[in-house]
Length: 207
Ligand code: GRF
Image (cartoon, rainbow, N blue to C red; front, side):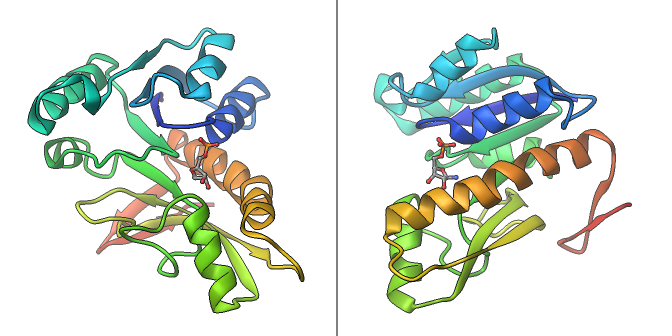
C-alpha cells in the first residue's frame, strides 16, 4: 500500500508510523512521501531521518486558498497514494481531494468521537475541554475523512483513563502514548491488508 502522510507539527504520530513500518507492525506498506503545511514542522526532519521524501506546501505561499488547494492536490496526486494519513494535519482538506480519495484519507483525532471534536477542537483544546467537563475516560479515534470535521466513518478507537491531577499537557501525552501511537499504525496495517470495509457510513473490520 502506497501511504502518504500529511503533517503540521512535531510528527510523533508520523514517527509511530515510521517505526511500525520498520519493525514490521505495519505490513504491505511503503511510505511514499510526507507533506507539511509548516516548513518548521519537526515531522519533516523525522521523515528526512528515514529517507522518506518530504516537502512543504503552505497556504502562506499562495495568493488565494484556491491556488494552494490546486498545487497541494497536484503534489498529493504526484505521490500516487493508495492511502493518505492526516497525522496532526491542521489544514482543511479541499473538497475535490475528499471526493477523489473517498474512503482513502484517514485522520487521528485525540478524543473518543463524537466527544470533543469538530471545529475548534484540536491539540491541547481537546484535553482542556475534557478536563473542564470532568470526564473519567478519554481516548483517540482513527476515522475516514469526509466533507465534515471529524465526522467520517470510525475505524478504531482506544480509551485512556483520566487521572487525578492531570493537566491538559499530561493528559495529551498519555492519550498520544497509550492511544494515538497505537491505533494509527494499527489502522494503516488493517487497511494495507484489506481488512477494512465501509457500508452505510460504518466500518467493519475482518478478523
Ligand atoms: C497532537 O495534538 C495529537 O493529539 C494530534 O495532532 C497533534 C500533533 O501530533 N493527533 P504530532 O506529534 O504532530 O503527530
